[in-house]
Image 1 (cartoon, helix red, strand yellow):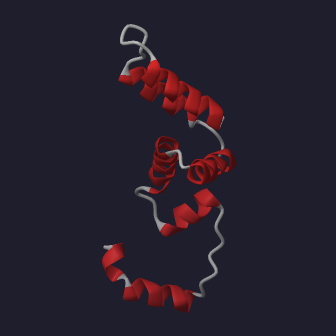
Image 2 (cartoon, helix red, strand yellow):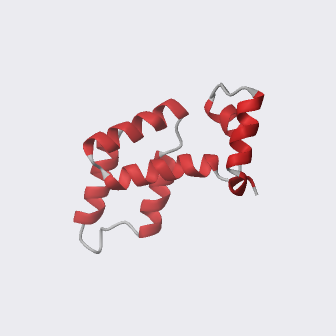
Length: 103
């Protein structure tokens, strides 16, 4: 998958202006490319980071950011299957210390 992404973006930048896909075409291709399950998305993030492929890293991280945006901590935990290991007292303390973040 990473190679497909790189080929598509290299071909898009190397093509002559007549053959060059439009910016919208490339954005649409990217949008389809990242329609994958969570495990694959996280693997793409790890690969892009390790291989220093900034465009792919930015794209995949933005998808994860969009998955988080506007959700409560409980919804985020459910989305990413994260266990809440805080006791109710610890959670209350964290919320009190960081009230500004919950406003």
